[in-house]
Each structure stands twice: as structure tokens, then as C-alpha cells.
Amino acid sequence: MRFVLMLMILFCAMTVRAGDSVLVDDFEKGLDPAWEEKVFEGKTSYSVVREDSGRILCARSEGTASGLIFEKEIDLGEMPILAWRWRVDDVLEKGDARTRAGDDYAARVYVIFPHWAFWKTLSINYIWANKLPKGEMIPNSFTSNAMMIAVRSGPRKAGQWIEESRNVREDFRKAFGKEPPPVGAVAIMTDTDNTGGSVSACYDNIRFISDPVP
Image (cartoon, rainbow, N blue to C red; front, top):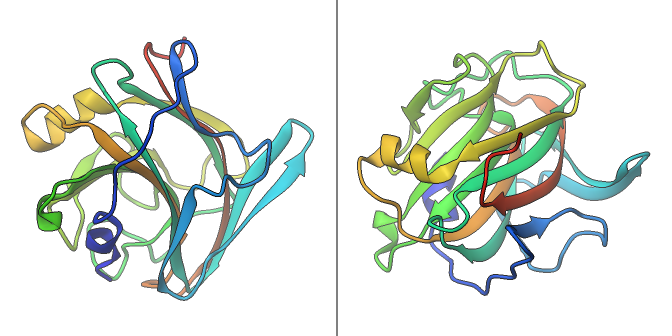
């Protein structure tokens, strides 16, 4: 399904800074109204729930594909690191980032780089891969404008909260061979429309920071 191109058409926004980080959302006040839902094939269920550590955003997909997009302009020269934490209940047996039929993920976080000509908009997709080995980067099976990076892979750590951080500026250079423009938006998606599977995941504390997480 060609939702990757559709996700990447919108973006420019105000940036709110606090010290050496820019918070996208930690969900402690519920789902920020700045999140915009984009529906591609049925609605994935997204809801903020409370756990012992605080509030988190959880998603449940049953053959559906919709995502949430947060418009925010980020200068990667100042804040090159994207940090977040996530948890999946499992991966998708039929999922495979190398095929269109398998282009589904329990969890993914997008960074979107808009262009006035939307077909030139680029994105990096940080995925909890099904089969693609951890650390591999490949073009999305529908468009080379979106690069898929397997931050995690397989079911071994399913059910556990995992803290992540990625140097988006360096990933962009490796993916596209040039310096990145400003970030225009961040998106999250749990989707199973191509495989027809069912899966759940949770997300929390999405932010840009100036220095790597120790």
C-alpha cells in the first residue's frame, strides 16, 4: 500500500525547546491535539493508557493501517538525536520489509523531511522489523524516498520496554548521500493491512536531543 508517499505531504510547524531537548510527546497529559490521524486502510486503535511508570500511547492493529503525525520543525544541526521508547507484544510472521506484501510492522517511528514538491519529500522509518536483521537499511518496497532502518528485529525482546536513540542526521547522510533539510514532522504507525495480521505496541517519550543517550 502506498501510504508512505501519502504520509509525507504535509509539514511545517513551531518548535518548542527546553534546555537541550525538544519534546514531541510524553503522553502525560493525554494525546496532544497536535497529533493528526491519517487513515489508509481501516483505523488502527491508538489510546493513551496509564502504567506504573506513567502514561503511554498504545496501538492495536487488526488488518488496519492508520498513523499519527505530529508536525514539528527540528534543526538537526542543533538536535540530531531522536530518542524514544517502545514495546511490542510480538512481530508479524508474514511481515518482511523486503516485499510489498510484507510491508507491515508492529511499531515504527518516522522522521519526515518535507519538500514543496511532495514527490521529493523524504523520510526515515525506524522500524521494529519482523525479519530484516537489526541494523540493516533498505528502501521502502513502495518508494525509494523512504528508507527503512531496522532498529530492532524479531520477537526476542517482545513484551519489554526498550529505550532507543538514533542520530537522524547521520542516518540521513547514509540513506540519501547528502545533508538533511530540517525535519518537518514525526509520525508513528502500527499497521497490518498487507499481512492481515493482528498486533499491539506502545510508544512513549518521543523527543529530539542534542547529545547521545549515555
